[in-house]
Image 1 (spheres, rainbow, N blue to C red):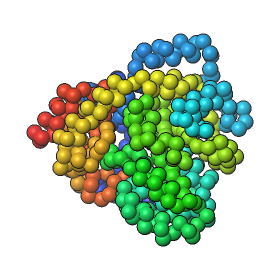
Image 2 (cartoon, one colour):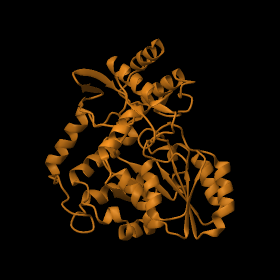
Image 3 (tube, rainbow, N blue to C red):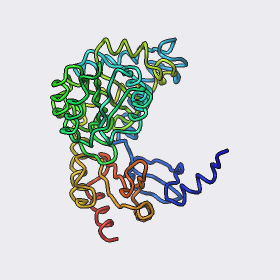
Length: 382
């Protein structure tokens, strides 16, 4: 029988033991063990989840429409409330796509879409640094797969040339903003590659880009002008949109097919209607959040420029790595920054490659330029 305590002790000895933090949230601040710290590890990129005027508006709407706090069923049974279809129609219209489909989480989306669409006659070609949920989806699909070197489109083209004719279908899979390094995929180049191989689709996860990039906040696909050319455009509501759940923009046929075959959709109780209504309110306001996107861009550039040579040069977004190297050094640095008022967390293998343990700074629109400058001064005074 496995000795799980021994496994935990080994994780602790190598600096890889994780625990659930006991924290209190107060806007952009975190309180932990009596210490108040600026939250630099949040995915609430636009700072929407804690804005009181948005909460007040939503509660007024909720009083008017009386939506329940539980769907009490999957959408295919009795849980398909009108607000779900309203949000899907709004999103399809805003993105200029045929259809949209909602999911309970980004993990549900990434572990459900690929297994439903791909099989052993399909080849999946995924960027080396795609999120763990995408990797799980690839493995669950049972499809043959190859990992192309990170953002190396020459390598991807070589794989397409070598293998595409051997399969009924090829699916290229990437994130738009990568979750650990904050760098950005060249979606236009990927679209061009996809078009060069007739049996090839493009799957893009915009989890870290939706809300914060593009003129209307529709992500890197909007910024790079290729929304309509990405076959499977995925994103989440749990980050910049300050809510919960995920979505897919696709064709009518693919939407109907997933409704009939995607196991996490079919066999999960739907999100509470009240949660979907909150998401709808925030998505409606997305085009008007230009100032929040501008502030986030300014502070992100400030921090990434300051951390050049330490990981900042990698980032092209609001996710900025501070690469330290060894686990113990990374943990020690993180705790030191927390003692000085900055809540930032270490990211260690296997989440990132061995020897690249880092602090992953995740900025939000509520963080000011002066606060970033104070952080930089502290880092360089160590």
